[in-house]
Every structure is written in structure tokens, then in C-alpha cells.
Amino acid sequence: MNRFVESLRQLLGAEPRRPSREDLTPEVVRIYDEKRQHKLTKEDLEANAAAHEKSAKRHKWRNRRWAVLIAVNLLFVLSFQLDVQLVEGSLTASRVLGFHMADLNAALQIMLAYKHVVLNLLIGTATVFLLWLLLGGRSFCSWVCPYHLVAELTEKIHLKLVDKKLIKGRSFHRGVRTVFYVIFALLAFATGYTVFETISPTGILSRAVIYGPTLALLWVLFLLLFEIFVSQRAWCRYVCPIGLTYGIVGSMSPVRVSYNMVDCKHEGDCRKVCLVPHVLDVTIRNRSTDIDVPLGADCTRCGLCVDVCPTNSLNFEFAGSKKLD
Image (cartoon, rainbow, N blue to C red):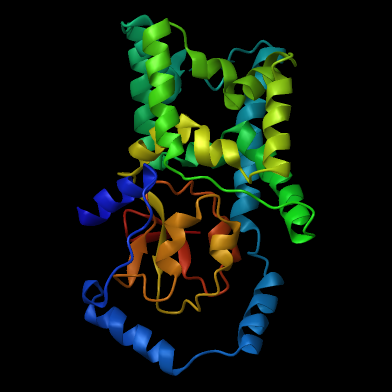
């Protein structure tokens, strides 16, 4: 339960707590002590990284994720263009083979704005809730959301500019996302209008891909330019309430990324590629309280850390036992 509470604390913006030596199990203490006595040289770490760079598994989960994300959004497009009615609507609200589905955050905004619940919305919300409860809530962000894919690609430009010292990347307190969550909820309740859905790049891009571009894409362009020149992945990290909603749902999911500290060399490569690196705080030396530790609720299950780890210390698993390959 303590681990669950700590996971939710981090989801809401709190910094990870640094465990004391007394919090570590005896087996973990023994392994850390052995690692301290047998430190790898810089050359050893570079050799491990170089060998992994040539591995066929280097981008396995990223490629799978991109394929699923493109396929899901393309299904909406083909269904509309060919008028086959397999999938109707957009990611905000849709019908799949006639069965209603509703984005959890959008449904919450609608309920607050109109102050009543219709049956179709309730059915759609329950269906999507169960789906992402099983798959891991924030996996919606990395495996389905079109803005995540676009922002992931433009992030590479930001990192190159930072690396060349042309710009200085800025970060903000993660707790502002919780503040925005409350603000958008209050705006919906007070105005009777779903303010967030109007400016959500997820909905804007989904509708643009399916039905054609609109001037709203200028807002998406502004967000991307802000993330390129000012703050890396700012919308997803500091503003978007969708991640918070799905993170709460996914905190109980059986599908997750788990960390095993036995063979980890603590290089930090996983944290460098992660959208939410605080969930990988456990990979820092002397931070893991147990041999196997599931990542927190804010994890998007994007798989980038699994791909980049040269020691196979990070893996997808189902219900704490079966690894997913």
C-alpha cells in the first residue's frame, strides 16, 4: 500500500522520496554492497552501451508502439473515408462497431459542464475505463495519442539544440499539471463549456487527421514550437490532464514496466529517454527498496527505457510475474 500511495504522490507532482538504508531489504543491501566493491570502469560501461546499440532489440518496443498508434488513428480515417462505419467519431468520443466509447477525461469534462449523465456516455466511459485499467492507463498517451507521436519527433530537435548549446531547456514543477487539472474541471463546471477539449491537441489532431485540417492546428504548432525552443515535452509533462486521469486508472493495472536491480549498472540512459524520468528514480544506485519494483502510475508504458537498457533490467510484465516480449 505504501508503494501505491507513493506512486500516486508522484503522479500528482511530488518528488520521489529517497529511501533510507533501513528501507532496503537485506538482499538488496547485499547486492548494492557487492556493486560498490566491484565498480565497472567507464570503458566497461561504454562497451556495454556499444554492444546494445547494435542489438536488434534496440527499438523493439518503440517500433511496436508507433505501429499501433498509427494503425489506431488510421482506422478512424479509413472508416470515415470509406464510410464502412467500423469506427465512428474521434479519440474524444467514438463508436466501435456501434458500441459507445468515451475518453475518460473528456467524459469528466462533459459531466461537469452539463451536470448530468446520459446512458451512452456512462456506457462509453465504463468501457474505456475497463480497457485502460487492463492495459495500463497512461499507455493511452504513448500508444494512441497522436500528439504524443508528433511531440516525440520534435523532441529530437529540442535535444539537438540543447546539445549544441543554442538554447537552454527549461523545466517546471510537475505539480502544475495537478493545478491545471483542477482549473479545467472548475472551468467546465462554472461555464458549462468543455474548455479543455477546445484546446486539447489530442482532440484537435485526431479530428484534423480524420475530417481535415482546421485553423486549430495553429495552436498545436504553437505548442510544438514552445516545446522545441523553451521546454521539452511541456504540454504532456506540465499541462495535460489526460495523463493524470489515465495515470490514476492505470495505477491498478496488471500491465506495467518493472525494474530488477540485480544486473543494473545504473548508467542513467533510461532516465535520459523517459518522458517522466521521476518514475525511474528507482534505477539510481541505492534507491531500489526491493529486487523487483514496478514503475509508478505516471509511467506511460512507452517502452523507451526497456529498449535502451543494456542489461535487461527493465521489462514489461503482466501481474507481477509473466514478462511480455
